[in-house]
Length: 117
Image (cartoon, rainbow, N blue to C red; front, side, top):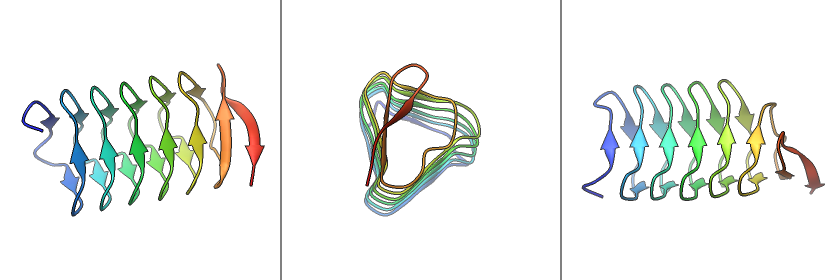
């Protein structure tokens, strides 16, 4: 989207989609067909896996890794250096302070495991 702000050092994968007001920080990498929705933030050196979805207002801090096909809910925050595994779901408004295992759903402040696959 023309209203998205992307650092010149960021790398966007094929088919990556950025909504209006999305911000992608320095040296961030977005995987193929990932979605950074309206107002979502991707911090410096973050890696967003292929097919991952950051819903509106999600905030992924610097040095984070979001796995393939993971979903970060509306207004959720993932703090510096945290990894969210492939296929994991972070509920809306959650604050993720620790790594999330693949195929796990977390919710709350601080985020806690809700279900595991």
